Structures are given as C-alpha cells and as structure tokens.
Image 1 (cartoon, rainbow, N blue to C red):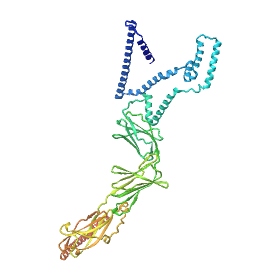
Image 2 (image 1 turned 135 degrees about the vertical axis):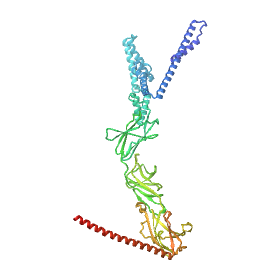
Image 3 (image 1 turned 180 degrees about the vertical axis):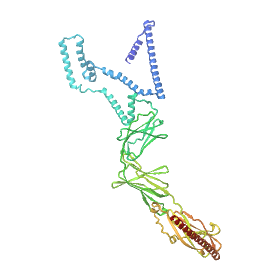
Image 4 (image 1 turned 180 degrees about the horizontal axis):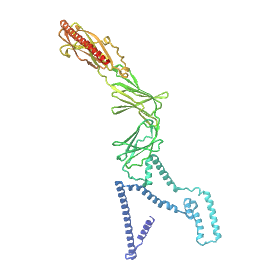
Length: 597
C-alpha cells in the first residue's frame, strides 16, 4: 500500500513538471513504465488463472472421489489438517520463535503506550548502544554523568507511574477469547455426540486404521435405552442413515461377568432391523455391525428391578339384561359379550405412567391408568369401565420415574362368549304314544341354557302337518312343574364354574280341554323356551293320532296279542336253552370219565 501511495505521489509530481515534447528521457521513462504495467497485469492474470484452475481441479477431484466412493477420501481430512499445521507454523509459530526486541525497540513501545515519557527512554538506550558503535563526541566522564542523570530521572518516573505493573497484554485478549470459545464448542460436541465425535476424531487423526472408508452402510441404533427392567424384553432397533442396509446385520452382546461376546443375527424388515433379547436378567453391553460398518461403540445397558405388583384383579359386570351381579377374577375368565370391565392393581412405588394393554386379534389397545396413593402403595385403575367386545389378553406396562418400561407383569385371558340360544327336547310323548280325545297326555321336556331359561310354552295345532297359522299356545308355569333342583342363577355359576341352567318339566295335559281335538284327528305338539336375552327356540314337532275308544281297545288288544306272541316265543327259547344245557352237561360228564380212564 505504501508503494502504491508513493507511486501516486510521484505521478502527481510528474504531472506538475512540464517535459519538452521531444524529450528522449521522457519517452524512455514512459516506455519502461508501460512495459512494467503490462508485466504486472500479466502476472496478476496468470496468478488468478492459476488459483482458479487449482480450485476447479481440487473440486473436480473431490467430487470424483465422493461420487465413486474411493478410499482416498479417508486421507482428505488428514491432509487438510497437515496443510493447516504447516500454514500455522509459517504464519505464527516460526515468526514468534524468531521474534526478539532490542532495548531501543522495547523502549519505543513503552513510549508509545506512555506519552508522558516522551522519547527520553529510547534516547537513553540509543546513547548506551551508540557508545559501543561510534567514538564518543563527549569525554567519557561527561557522557557517563549525562547518562546517569537521565537514568535517575527516568527511574523516578517509572517508579512513580508504575509502568512495569500497569503493562497490559492486549495482544492476547482476542486469541484467548477465541480459544475458550473453540474449546467450549469442542467439549459440547464431545459430550453431546460421544460415539460420533470419537469416531470422527479417530478417522481424522489416523485414517490408515480404517479399511472401509467411505462406508456404504451407516447403521445406527434407534431409541437406545440405557436401562431395562429385570425380566423384561429388550428391543434393539437398528436403522440406516443412508437408507441402505447390508444383507446381514449382527449384534454383539456381552453379558455382565463374561469375557467373550456372542453374535446374534438381526431380523430384517423394510426400514429397520429388530432384535429382541427375551427376559433379560443381568446387565450387558452391545454393539452393531454389518456390511462395511464395523466402527460402532459398545453401548451399556444396566438392569433395574421392576415395580412389584402386589395385587391385580378385574371386576366384570355382565350386561344389564342378565340381572347378574359383578364378579372378580385374577386369571382367565369367561366374559359375556358387551360386559363392562374395571381393572385394579396395587404396586409398591410411584410411576411416571401406567398403561393397560389389551391384545385382541393382533391389535394392541393402550389405555392409561389412573394412579391413587393409598398408605404405602399405589393403586392403579381405569378412569371409566371399558366395554369388552372381543376375546383377548390383558397386560400391564409400567414406566417408572427413570423412564424404564416394564411389561408382562400381568397376564389375564378374557374369553368373550355370546349369549347362545337355549335348547329343548321333548322326552315324552313320542309318535307311538296312544291318545284318546278324553285322555290325559303326560309331557316331559328338558331345556338347557348357558344363562337361564326364563319362559316355556306348549304349542299345538290340529292338522295333518304343522301349520303356523293354526298354532295355539299355552304358557307353562316353570316354577310349578319343574321336578329337578335348578342351580342358583349367579355370576359364579354362569361364568366362573361354567355350569349351564338345566330345566326338567313333567306335567300332564288334559286333551279334552284342547279345542278341535276329536277322534281321527292328528295333534301336533312342540315346546318353545326363551332365555334372559329373549332368544327363543322350539323343539321338534311330535305328531299324535287321536283314537276313538273302539280304536283304542283294538289297538290295545293288538298290542297285547303281540306281547303274548313274544312271550310264547320267549318260552320256546327258554325250553330250547334247557335242552341244550342238559345236552352239554351229559357231554361234559362223558368227557370227564374218558379223561379219568
């Protein structure tokens, strides 16, 4: 800059001086000036082209290395670090090592900082140095006397102003601040991204230790958990930063106390790989690898004790139409479709979150539980009852105050059943039963239902075939004609003991009071029953032919003759069997006598 300013000053002076038109000196000077200007511009253009071409070539080489993923890129950071080290050495280290101030230069710096000294300090240093270089103009005594007087004055002023103590090192203020800022950034990166920072630092300082770089696969652990509950499953989810997975991904697991590790293959999915360690009982460390990714750090997982579930139960309330009371269970239970369920559990410590899990048909429903403090325990329950519409399994997921998740603490199977319609059978009469228009017909029927049979009707019609348009009904009073003792209708019997309701009815029907029943007609009978829900079902139809007295006597006489004939045949068979028995006895005696002889 000084040279440019001087040139400008000289140019202004030359413009002020008038040269003759035919001056050979001026022409020669202008010719040399134009040639120098042309050389300077050419040199600037060449250096600009060199720098631009070098930058372009470097960018092209770097892009080619990245594009083809060549291993030479591993040395790029190391080369840049060495280049920066050389630049720093040439720019600051070597000049600082060679830097040395003479007494005169140090005195000038002090005078620049403290104007009250003037130039006396530098003059004193110059006088002492000049005495060694040049012969003194004054006599030795006068020179020494003059120097001594000046030095005494300066000593008094230096002590007065405390120049040595007030000297401030301003030149180090900015570098110290920048150094502290960079160290703070470095420490934050080191503690915030430990594995990544350690891997990047090692790769930068010693690139020759990495065989695969750049890597095609960049594996990472998704949602790493540092703690696991004892007895719980530990899920390891592995993702890829580049969305490119190797063919096989492995996890090395080393359990606490073991010197060797075991390698497990990870199950693959589309976007992530998962590995489940079932029922973990001790602490362990693990790391992942696969393909050309082999620089993963060991991750620690410590074991913690899960919350203690001291009591768990479900309270099931059947639908209102059943008129049944609620019942409790802590194991597998039969639940009627549409029942209301309330869950309750008691644990020994506070939780961050408690969730009731309901697994049904491959779907997991999650319901948050409400916590309530009670003495030295915590009671968990649903905020409102849940309606059960399908079979499934109840589970419990507890998250403690440290964020550790515990599962599989409760396992209750719920088997949802529908209210089936009842069944009914007529044991008597049957199609061969003899019936007269004025007779009394015995009726025996058995009905069953999973809950309770509430009503029964006798349905009949007088026709050759069952005709729904001619049906007549008589309600059967169950309480009056039930002959067997029925099991009490309770939730315990229906859902816990799983015992059905069995009803047996025996009664007599006065045929004469049934309308349109006469000799020669056919009486069609059946029984219909209904349960609590209103489900009804009818038995098979029993056709009965109504006989007159003459027909009845003839039928009875015919049946008696048939019985007499059967008795006569039976008598003949008995006589024949007696003859056969005697013959066998005689043969047995003869055989015995022959054997004795």
